[in-house]
Image 1 (cartoon, rainbow over the protein chains, first blue to last red):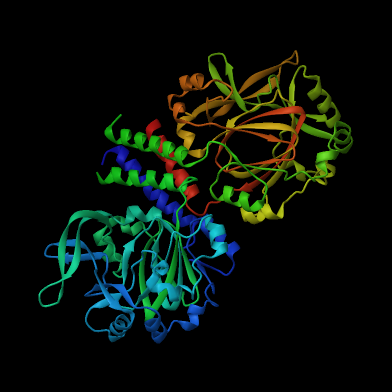
Image 2 (spheres, each protein chain N blue to C red; image 1 turned 135 degrees about the vertical axis):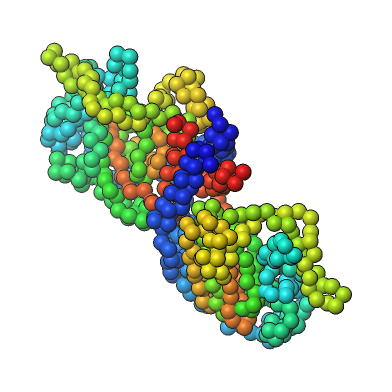
Length: 313
Length: 313
């Protein structure tokens, strides 16, 4: 590397070290919106205890109620619970989308419990709780929370319901949203990395693919046009294995947070997250608020991203 | 420049442009602490209207009361109202400290009104309102404001009183503090530049100096050991004149805010500020709160500063 690129690399590594020195390695637990406000100010993950304790969904959402309240829905189907994840095909990894298929809530729950064959996951994440098919369930949770809107300074962009089993894992990625992730049943475990750790995650461009059924009805990967940037880091592997994939991963620090039923995770915009779940089924709703573009954070992250790319070129 | 340094310069210039695109060019005016909280979150200047409206200081602090309440104090004395400013000595600029001299509040106010001879400014900014000599005045203003502590998440580090006239100007600089600047009498006008504009201010190292009296009693500059980084930019000059001093100044954007008696300015940590005043005298108090080191802001600013220095070397 030239002296200049070495200086950039050194400054980036000092930034990551500074960040980890000045910030907690664990998520604080809060039970007041005032405390949550401070977590949002510093864009730091926090668990908000008991926020859903009194929501009707907490007692009403059992299999029978769900099956009677919801008809046909779109379900992400994969062979291994790996929706939107890297899949080795021949000698290369593709970023593979799930097969989205329509099924009744009753059949979906049955398939979920069977633990056999295809892995199914309700994860449409398109604001589904505002859709007609979920109108009855939408009555059991607030579609907006005044104190959260006050903290975020805006109404939620989208409210989603997620229903899945322990086979489904969401691979490491980040979103341009402030996220309040509320667990209704089961538990969710998040592996989190701060935005400054982007340098440690070794993003590369991967060809897109999707799961389709072959003649025998088996799910196989079909390549698609176009490439997308994704990280080869998998928090389910050991740190050593990940460092073999990306040397800079040694500088990163993973924050693992398990969120229980009735509690919520504040997942700040730009934080990388990998999500696992337990429960039969695990049910959650999440509130996405648009990230702030004013202030310094957004512009500075764009700048930081450019400096990382200077080293990649 | 090498390609890499060009890429850094381009990324810095894009950062400054992004910041100005996504942020207001003026200071919002608020009259509730909830609104102020949002300004603090985004580290954006804001005028807080009427915060001091009912403080006893607003009606009590006239010349007679001040002279009777306060004895000897330390006063910054300069020939031109230029404390801690660049002064041309021979063929170079020195950063010159004022002559600090003891005088009674009565003599100080008299000298302030006379508008003749030395320019005097009470600007000790060492937490002076907590000192015994100001004990009586300290009863007329809150030494801490509960809602501000809640927003800042800490008590003030220092509370200062400032008394000066229109001859005194504070040159462009920045502090590592969140600052609530409350005007009690007269008006203060702030010329503000966001932290990302550091690149536009062309910091250089200047030899230190201080004002001393020669045999004839006249104030002259005496050189001191050591150098300090300072900006040659003077908001009292035209933009063109400043661009002649620092070409990158063309990318900057100055936010000018005039604060009236009874109102306060939230001056965010790291913002560059140049301060002028009117009133006979102009009186203000300010509350300094330590800046936040957690979250991303502090670490990112350190990183940004290193990238600017890469271009300077």
